[in-house]
Image (cartoon, rainbow, N blue to C red):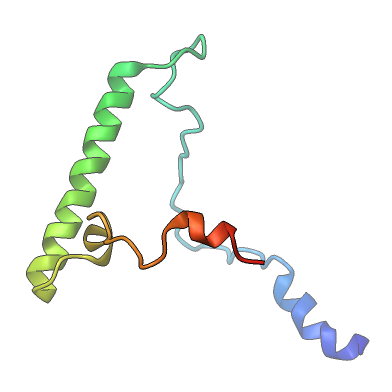
Length: 95
């Protein structure tokens, strides 16, 4: 069993970078513009972020409908569904 697990461990070992290759530095921002330095909420940035995300999702739904000819299932599901045949009260009476 130990021999069969060896390939898994070999692929999990980090590989050394080849010398002379191209390196692209990545800078990751750990800070968020949604909060101020004192950790209070930046409401202007939050409003902008929500508006941007809403617009992005709306465009995606519009493009889905243009491409398929039908509204996205999530948009279809947002309409109120018809009520079922059994009232909710009748379910509690079951054993």
